[in-house]
Image (cartoon, rainbow, N blue to C red; front, side):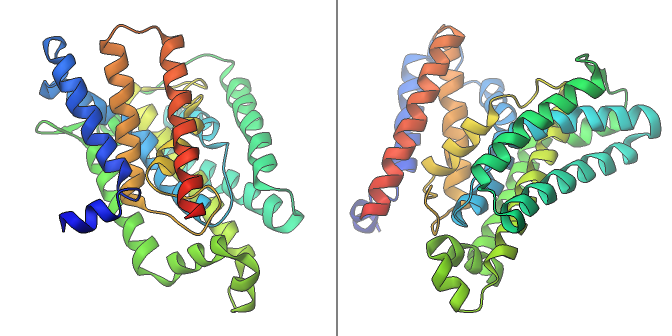
Length: 313
């Protein structure tokens, strides 16, 4: 088993890197509380929303597309959910969150697969639209959520010492892994990204596959927004801002190819946790936010480099 692991070291680089970074921080930051249960659980809480979105982005990238709007959609969803809860209660808020994800995802999918606009441009435009709508309908003010039940279920609660956010992340991770690896839909997603023309000739409706993964991505972003809103007990257009970079980096670091045809949900979750680990360690080291951004950019460059090497091999 160890020989097989060593022989496929490039495929396992995310796990090697995660362990190495964890050990380095554990040794250097032990006196600053890095290994305390509260700090490790905080890493999970801060990472869960990134992981939820990254699981869906794994499908998008595997199909040969990209979604840059997830962070803005999450922010918009926090606002729509908070406003709906204020008017109709928690159930209305959940429906508003689902509707936001379905609406944005369907629009992205329609523009990409029917109109023919590349998903990069479609979702880049949607990033601005979603943020603008969130700012407009909220008047740039935070919208409070006064429902303890909603806040507990969507992000703010604990099962004993286990954060509800960890349950959400693991549940969606298992579902995503099973769908990608064990279902016909997952195989069609990988086939579409691996060679769209060949997939189309083999009878796969590649346009429908791409439409569905873009809807999945927006719905996952909406769920992340619902979790943001529940954890912070408010809707704010700033929530989720910039998350698209971390989401894509997590997926690519985990072994999903930017060029389609290859994806792994388990690796994506580890990639998300790795980014959360690094962010947490940098904060404990006392680095400024600007320096943290530089480090995050370095992670993205590393992810792309590793993806290219894997593809070339």
